Length: 331
Picture (cartoon, one colour):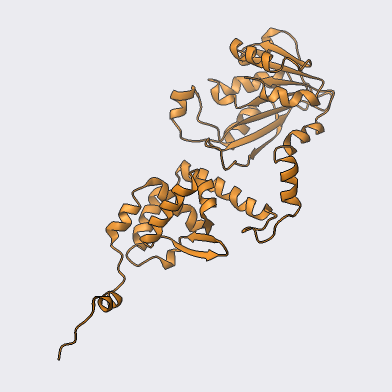
């Protein structure tokens, strides 16, 4: 006698096969590939993924739901939070080789390197978050301090360590950001730019800062305007705009005097990247610099004790990663 099989029972007994075509559709969106890459490294909440890929949480939630629906990511609840991850061993058999092939093609992309930098920052924020990762512990000093005083005071306050007798050159000063920060802590700032419009903007912005002098000068010809020396010089987001960076670093080194404990050149710029549109849109001559490139140029300019450090990446920044390089004239 034949037994009638109800539809519910048929569905229950059917093998849970996820069509590869649906997974391919989910993988067609580049941002979802970025999410999978970071979720294979670390289990993350929606908010953390949003910080890394720099998209609204609602958008990220939608993408993660699609990845979850096709079994490319797993999710679990911890308290009020939902965590997502990609565990290679837990992928369905038909999807594992697909993801491995795609992941191999993504290797070395600068976009994924920037996501990795932001992932490190998010993980550091976890460790420093005194409310505990999911807010289980509230109200300790870390949060109280930020609530009372904000988060931006530490770096400017550390400028008080600079010798107050120094004269510092802000080379390529633009609208005067560096000069404004340095002026309260040193005897004199020389703000140098070859663009008169920029100098005009800087003068207006720093009109109430009497210890800032302004100089119109080509950065490749600093020593041609007369004999002048400074204790330290700063090139902040300038060198990538210069056709011949080595020439600028050489000129900057020549105006340094080491006799008062100075002789320091500081360079802040972008790490090497592949955003070609920056050449067209913003006139960049160079797509950043590798640590070895900037070290070589500074040493060829006669600077010693060169050090290059990658700067922490802010989760709300959209540009490439930054570095700070320093070198000294010891003669």
